[in-house]
Image (cartoon, rainbow, N blue to C red; front, side, top):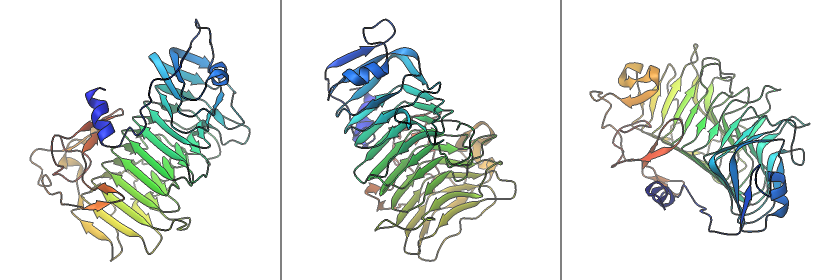
Length: 377
């Protein structure tokens, strides 16, 4: 195991690391030339190694348990070209302990206009180093309380023009979502990340709508639940479709416990008239807001019973080079060293152990996080 995989596994960011199983090799010069053919032949526990390149109109449904799909020799790019599985997406995943590494999903559209690069309908799935662009949705899950989804070092890029009902990542009412080291950008009327999961861990990511992006919320938990949002760069564009950056429980608190832990994030508002950092609807929500840096016009409004600690408004000049996306505090910034202990919440110690590195990925911190915001180095 590489050093990077060792600390990712230790941090719980790689919950499923496949064991060796029967190997199927796919590629234009192989006996199996398509993903669709491989899906028909694969058994439980199979490792499907796919030669790098473009695979056109190659949609498939994968019901196998313990399945690994792995790009070999470079990236595997799946271009929909009108194809889809079950009218849902390029890949439909239904098995337990499935894993996809090094795939890009491009151009998915289906008759009901709610297609996705990947549809997770049942089981559990880990995505590592995957990309999504020009799909109606990047990834979409079913509503199934047994589903678990882990996303590591992925890119959820531009959304296909449409009616605005789609999202870069839309997670239904599932058991657990964990996202780390991933880049969400260039939404279109929908949200960059929307999760109805009972537990959502959103750690060390970049959710920035970028120039020309027209996302609604950058981050939404419509039914609340338990959400840990830590170590993220979250930025609202000047062309956003909604002034709110983060929303919690706006569609009703259907989960038993409502808790939001917003810790060590760098929040940036570029809406000319000023946006709204946070909207929390359920009055019983346990909310912890600690060690966040707020860049832009609005203040961080909060209810009286919320725990607020070491949140600071920061001018653009506090950062090394914000205009070039370097959001580290300058060495002489008065804000350095001002982070405070945020305790525990959502099953985690609320102190970052990693930070996001663009264009996607994370690096481990050398020591305790002492600065507010998402970046310590």
